[in-house]
Length: 406
Image (cartoon, rainbow, N blue to C red; front, side):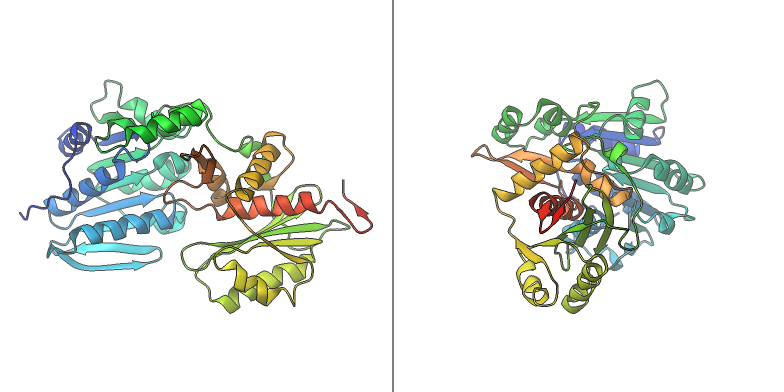
């Protein structure tokens, strides 16, 4: 068999590979801090399963399509000089690598639940599992292993004590079908300890413990009360005498454009999220929403591609105003949004992708001590930024003309 060496695993990674390749373990769960090497471990294990025997089906499941695509590209880049690939394709929802031995790695998003149903697989890697719904794991992913299934590798940074925590606990028991491992960020021999120490001194302890020390804490979310406040259904148009305020985050190819509509009570009444469209289609879609709700004011982010979009929409969309996201304005609007959630001043639409972004949004601190808010690598923050801009628009325009919004 052709030998491929992509990396030199450190001790804890070696132990995981041993469990994934032994004769007894079915579920191997890896609870790891950020940049601890868990994804690299998963990539190498997926390749090992694919190439060890012919005609094997390996599923790589990530919380989002962009994460799955990123792993697909990383694998292609790692083995592009080795003559083992028969074909590959990166189309949305149908991303896969087919090897000359007949084995296949298929890359899927957990959000596309219906596309996951019905297939039997030999091996499965579930990446960032803590950010995938338990119902998706129990009712869709597990049944795929019922017939042909031999091994399942579950890897993630923790997020509370959800089903991922339960699977990790199973590996601490006596059932030999389960194995569990824990890596901190500092366990990675390539980690920068100075950066880790800096994060420890500047991040909230509960967040540091979760993100770097891989501790299962009760709550380390930046935004509180998400479950209690994500209860609304979108409306199809204006209601009664309500007034509306809109925040728009512009994205083109790799990011999403998100248009968020709030009413004067701080209720998220409508959201439109889309990607991979041409500039004319994007502008027409934004204009359609603004024509429908006729907002008191709309803030459109000017950064990156936003400037040209604003210039074209400004003459034809009343009450449109540009918003610059800077190193000072972004922390300000995010902190305002954090306060809105903690004090229950907002209610948002019950949409899984929105809740995932809110739950995974995090903060790090730079050398200058400033907070940097962003999504973790592989996640999006377009929902969050659009909502933050919309809430800023609401706060800045509560009193306008003859209206007093309460």
